[in-house]
Image 1 (cartoon, rainbow, N blue to C red):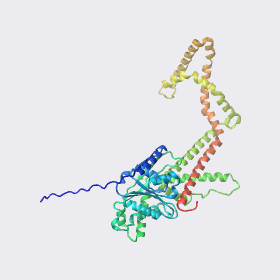
Image 2 (spheres, rainbow, N blue to C red):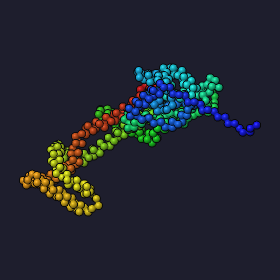
Image 3 (cartoon, rainbow, N blue to C red):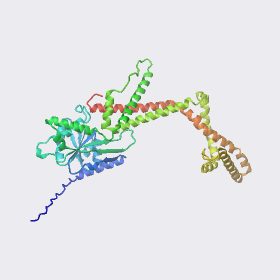
Length: 461
């Protein structure tokens, strides 16, 4: 009898083929994202091992666009759970059907969750998003409660969802004024459903809540969220923007008795910022960039006001401002003529490095060389003019060379020291209104985000 031990090898379970209709619509979605300059980058996609069932818990408010992002970004087929109210119009309806999305009407979410569980039993990947409404007083709790219910509800112990992984998924979706056009999808480490179920104790509702609390902590660990210091800075700047707006409003009504003493952000706004940092960091980044644009405009405005304040008595006189602006306009042709006359000299000075101060040469020597280069260019130009235009033409042209050079020097001083400041003083009202508009746009965006957040929590705007 042979004493060797036979090794039995099991063939790997085949990966379910992705239907053609799904690949067709996914291809169209990917083309659309490419044409709209939105690149989708998926981090840690290798964690979605096939053919194990996977429940993707997307810690992001449910949105049809986010569902399309998951479909386009992942190579594995994903069945997304989306409310029917988000699928409006012919094309979205065709997309939802072709991509196998699971739609549900208000009040029919439990039936949709049963559909999700049936798909997971067939080794599918299902994505569910953060659902709004009064049932969601805490960020993500409805999402994780649904995930816990799917993982724990087993009609038959023998038909357990073997290998089911619960994956927290974090999205960074640029919105509004943000410069980034890259959409990021981060697949977090999975939680094994069977392991979690074995650790949960008590009745089924207690087990669901215990598991939901654990998953809620995982989903809130968004890899794209701002650091606490950056979030605190954002809230401080937001409070300052509100203070500036109220100050202008109060100053425009001198008869009013409103004061800014004791003004601070409400606890609702602070909680909104903390929750949006966990759920939708892309929105917070967009708001920070709008805020940064307003602050930069304020900084530049302060510098310009300082320039205007230190300009001198000529700026405070209408006649002085008018003379500077008139010379700026009428002197431009003369300065241009001087520039043409000195192009050869300027080119030589540039190539030799004599235009730069502190180039290593003695200052007196450097100025001597500059004068020699300019005189040499004058002589060369006079020879050419005398050759082609005669001595009389050269005689008329000779005095214009030094005069145009001197005025070019004067004009290059005039532009930054007086013309620039005169134009700034003329545009102060436009600049002030532009700064105010940036602040109002930022505050409007914040108010819209607060309204959406209140709607998600089932609160009045």
